[in-house]
Structure formats: C-alpha cells, structure tokens
Image (cartoon, rainbow, N blue to C red; front, side, top):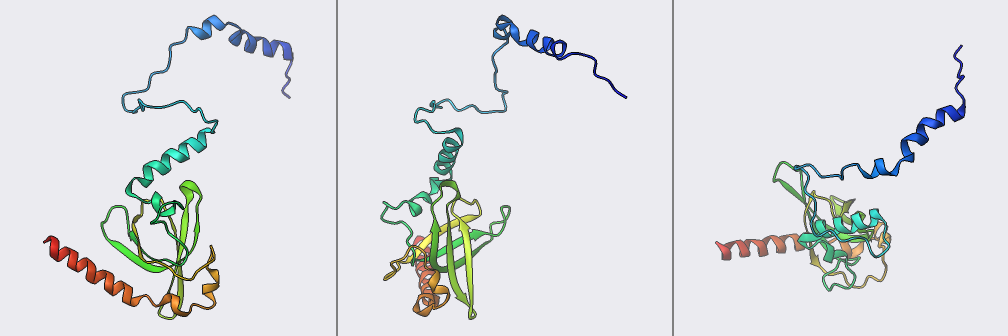
Length: 190
C-alpha cells in the first residue's frame, strides 16, 4: 500500500515559495518571436470590447473576402445575392489542379454568419432535384456569379420550390447565353 504521509502544508510550501518573489518574476526576459514567425506591425489593441475570437473572425472575413465575395452577402450592396437569383458557382475540383466544375441553380437559402456564411443552390438535373450547399469563404470556390435576378419571390427561404418548382428551374438557355457571351469576350481580347 502506498501512503501519503506528507501534510498539505508541506506540499503547498514549495508552491508558495516559487511564486512569492515578484522580483524574480520581473527579472525574466521578455518574449521575442522567432524569425520564422511574422508579427503584424500595425496591430491595434482591442478597444471595442470584442472578444478575441470575434476579432479573429472579423480579420479572417476581411482577408478571405478580398476578391469581392463579401459584397455578395452585404445587404446594403446593390449587387448582393437575394433568394430567387439564378447563380453560377464555379468550384475547384482539388486544390492542386486547375480543373473546375460549375453548378447553375436558383438560390433558395442563405445564412449570413460571418466567416461561416453559406448559401444553398437548387436545380433540376435529369428530372431529379439537386441541391448544393456552399460555404461562401471556402478556398474551393473559384467564383460566384449572378446570371439572372429573381423576380416575384418575397420569402427569405424558398424551400417551397422543392415541392412546386414551376418555371424557376428552366435554366438551360441561360447557360448557353453565358457561354456565348464569354466566347465573344475571348474573341475580342484575342
């Protein structure tokens, strides 16, 4: 059997002796970052009362939205996404290859959650309804384009289109028009 014969006071005496001297703690050298770590020079102290995670999330949104993605979810911007818009989303198949895949569909839902903002696009492919959910700031998304503005939709979530798609999913002509317009641009620039 093991026995612990040392009293609690004897156990704590070593702990208090380590932290009792403030002069010894003050004499420790200050921290310097290694050469491989870049330290931002224009770092401003947090004066708005935000927590550290909110500050990091805001900086990440600013960094990830440098290519104009942030304006798609900004309600006050005239080019923002709205439910009912026909959207073309171009995604990378892998980070190493330049091959892309595209998906065209009606925007049926969007969630504005800062760095975790996402949107859901729906289309009917070969008489089967297909929904794709994309994270707005994902590095796998190459581009998001609005092909046609939605008209006559007055809801924030268009989940009722799952049951009664109607005219909303006739998008083949839009894709052909977009390809023709891009071919004209390529011919003009060449």
